[in-house]
Image 1 (tube, one colour):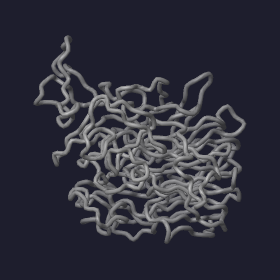
Image 2 (cartoon, rainbow, N blue to C red; image 1 turned 45 degrees about the horizontal axis):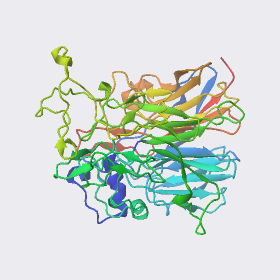
Image 3 (spheres, one colour; image 1 turned 120 degrees about the vertical axis):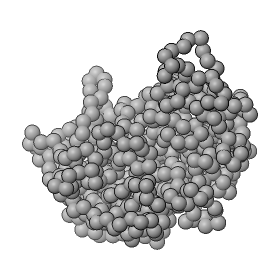
Length: 551
């Protein structure tokens, strides 16, 4: 599930009531009122309305949930379900953030964290190596709990404030791995684009003093030589990429690496905690970098060629802000060794953002008609002079987005194995092992579009994607679970309603025969209303897709 600028502002306001917000962001943030919305009723889930291949059967494990966002299966086949809590507008009363634990028959056996978790819950992951459930709280924290009867313990804190925070979590060979998002959209603590830029004394930056300031900004994973790219916000402040708001950058300036860092997969040795039970930042290490907003992380099945391959789902840049990046894809990566780099914020998926794909407006050499009028190199407006070649009028000039980094990674970059439709994020992912009729395939939940339209001619959500890895190389993808017509229930003919709304996670039972699909429920979007969203209470569903062996 993709968090939004003003969404996260609502969370900050909840814990930092003294922090003011821009008026336009206050109008959009989640609240008890939802303008002139008429109450919507949840659609009754109907397995017959979810299309899957022959040999599979769809069922409903649990319906009538509020905002289920993720799930994990423990050694006893109990299903732990993260309940996000209110993230978007609603006129309904929603459950607060917590975790529900169901046995394999669907009986609720325990609830965890109702009075402890303060912000939304996006992910949850089980580590079989130490029989421990890990629960990231989307507010700079990670918790752990050993078994249904265990104690909930805080183990990681003071992660960076921003739009994209701690995501998916897993373990392997004595290490805990977790995703840590890149705080900003495209590299700038820009107050015209983000609601958190002036929050004082971000605990991360109080701990990691970099001499630039302690308001939130993007921590980098390697030493960066700066191009001097700055933005001027509407309040007149000049802010450099990777800098705190109001701090300009200079060409050649060096930005020092931090641990942990944004857009990374971090790891730390299991049990390597301080006396207070917290994993200190100093004992963490960067496993992979150059991502933006990672939700799913999953190593391949044991005993296969994929057991050391870490799959990562990653949400692409939004076409907003003074350094706006168009057509940023949703991505699936395969990390095969420590230190690999996806290249963000200068590389978006397969290509650098200086490629023409990522800008909709050309540079024609006219200082007045600059497509990025608030971009500067140092204190000079960024200009791209006309070149020697000229093309037809509608395609003359240059297109592309200027870069932040002047020292490319000398070790090169990895590319994603799959790019998906812009702003239709592939969130939770899981590998199939055996007994599912699709060994060593990767499955991903496509949550769907929210605030970052437009919609595609043919909607590419909600779905469960299947990715097959070919020999000797390459991938093949297919729609494994989908509705009768493209799109969620609101897009369907009345007789076809009852299928998927917003799948956010897939996870397998221990025997591998059943896939659980966590469906967040309906978030109806209409920016023509006073408040743009309506989260429909009790519309969340946990679906099952079971292999029956047919063909």
